[in-house]
Amino acid sequence: MSKKITKICCIGAGYVGGPTMAVIAQKCPEITVTVVDINEKRIAAWNDTDLSRLPVYEPGLDRVVEEARGRNLFFSTDVDKAIDEAEMIFISVNTPTKTYGKGKGMAADLKFIELCARQIARVAKDDKIVVEKSTLPVRTAQALKSILHNTGNGVHFDILSNPEFLAEGTAIEDLHAPDRVLIGGEDKGAIEALVQVYAGWVPRENILTTNVWSSELSKLTANAFLAQRVSSINALSELCEKTGADVNEVARAIGTDSRIGPKFLKASVGFGGSCFQKDILNLVYIAKSYGLHEVADYWEQVILMNDHQKRRFADNIVTTLYNTVSGKKIAFLGWAFKKDTNDTRESAAIYVADHLLSEQAEIVVYDPKVPAEQVYADLDYLNTRSEDENRRLVTVINDPYEATKEAHAIAVLTEWDEFKTYDWDRVYNNMLKPSFVFDGRAILDKESLEAVGFDVYTIGIGD
Ligand code: NAD
Ligand code: UGA
Image (cartoon, rainbow, N blue to C red; front, top):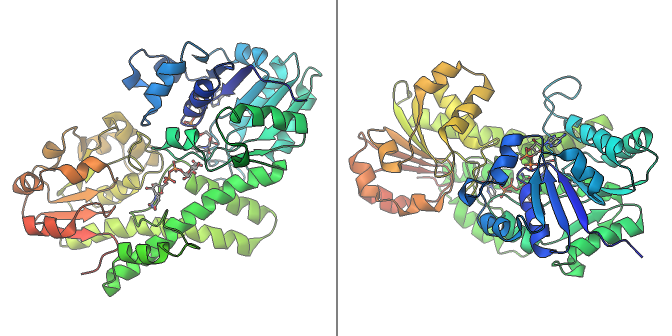
């Protein structure tokens, strides 16, 4: 018989920890869920009475938080207390690509994970189930086990791997009705205790249990396969542009083959987000560390293709604008890495902007959910030019009509639905002529924009 869990703690109140725990609390009112973080500003935002100021923007998240917060969902900076009281501890901290030392630019940086493990070991006075929710290199559970059992107070820890598959922008839908929940572990009782939590709302047949290594590796594999589809269709988008084929038609034609399937075949300016690149680099690094160089090269190509797609989108803007964008105003519609999120990590927009700024363009950004300070922080982080120069060359305006006024060109970087609803005659009348649109998401109707007078380039569609 496994123990029925009544107290959960989650370390890390980010894009995964916040929504995931909010849904567990919503669906399991008998479990007290405390989400902790060292970032005081973030915790304060999770506790804000104004739900429009939650730190993560996700459709439907505000309603879930409203229902559970203060009932059985709590956000706190008191990490020790939450660890001490919990029977089950989720680790959901960030695991970015290393920026220093061995494996720099490839391996996952596990320092935050290790800090959590040491803190759990120091604080825990009774047995705990520790759950890896963060995405981790295969075999991390072994390191966690060693730290927990060698630095702890003699209590017993069971370690489970329970990777998260939600996508930003649809996190609540994905959490409410996941394709599957994956739980890897050794101890049957510990596995069953976590199965019981999810069984509160997920059908049993959708809860898969495996050994811990399969679970860890499946998460990296899932992201690699998804990103590979995007790079595959993006590779074909370039060929479509040269041959007069239309990538959307090609995607539809191949996606109706049930073995291929219709999802994740949308050509774009390149995939972004905090995970695809990081997780593939991690996979490549792991393969290399086992001496599997062909395996490493195979997966690395998904990233190289993605870099190429971002670069060629920017290059095409320069070429089309008579080989110079110096001093020209280019309006960016969208900065987030996809629609329905305020997350900008690894967004293609950052790299396209950086390239155009190096060509001395002036960029005006409009995004419905991304504030100016985030746009500047993203550009400053690249360290390509001074912070002053980024602020001199880039303006962020929260009105699309103002942002596009007197621009030479518009570049669509994110597929926000509202872009399709604009009064494009009005936009055209206020722009310099000829007025160019570079649609990096293929969301605008090319023919009707051309009828308005625009010169339109759409990713994946040749002339
Ligand atoms: P995030 O950066 O939004 O959140 C991580 C949080 O952990 C931060 O708020 C940080 O302050 C906190 N933290 C770090 N060290 C801490 C410590 N020692 N004690 C307390 N708090 C600490 O990251 P995220 O996007 O939520 O991703 C978390 C993990 O989930 C990553 O491994 C990621 O790969 C994985 N993942 C992310 C997504 C996604 O869509 N973002 C989806 C699936 C899996
Ligand atoms: C992705 C996976 O979809 C999740 O299952 C996974 O849990 C998550 O990574 C993670 O581990 O972090 P996410 O990055 O939030 O989720 O968003 P996606 O919908 O996968 O989009 C990633 C990028 O690919 C976006 O920039 C998106 O615009 C782009 N994309 C996606 C395309 O260009 N074309 C497509 O057809 C699909």
